[in-house]
Length: 277
Image 1 (cartoon, helix red, strand yellow):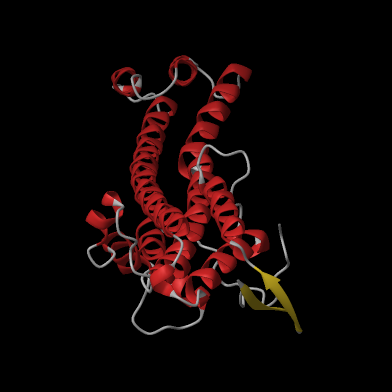
Image 2 (cartoon, rainbow, N blue to C red):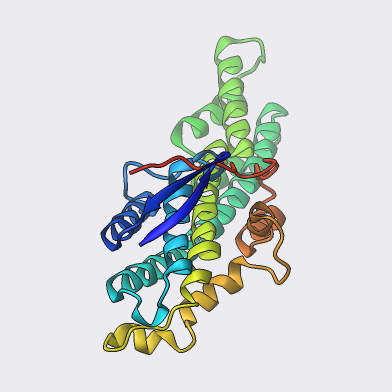
């Protein structure tokens, strides 16, 4: 089947075969596989991924006789959307867990500050406070707090080192750097999953489900999986692609709940696409 594809300002004639599309779907699956070595880093910078999705979408939309659409491609595209949907849900669960961990860390940092102040002031209950927090912090922090509480002068090297160690741990708990990094990584993967939902699932809805495939027939019912995915990622008014991604449920969750700054201020996706095999 022949399609015309615009790359920059040059129209390039391409022949997209069934085998090529199946291969491209396989490449997409590898890129969104959380166990894959090569994964999406930043959607806006990954022209290869965009090209793969573009070729799949074009094939689905421009296939001339939808009733005779290759069942192998339909099945593979359907499974791609289903897998993307499942991964999207898993990402949401991971984000929720990271939120809980971050809140726990911030709470512990506040508590540790209080215990540190008690040991520095030689509060009469400082030993009890250290004991209470001992199950939530590492042994070196417990030892440092005890050192601070027992030191008769705040000028000694042991005292200074102990305070520095405790303050460093408080700063780490407050910054949650590793959690923020994990959130950004999950965010980038979810942008790619949303991209699949917007581009592939919508195009797939235009094609009748092939008969004889029980799994697809049962799940099809007006493309339940695609509809559920689209309900999470699309909006009624069709703005630019990036605007649609920005308005997705996942991005709203990240923005409003986790307060993580999302780099969605990119002007637009590249207009031209390279020919990646």
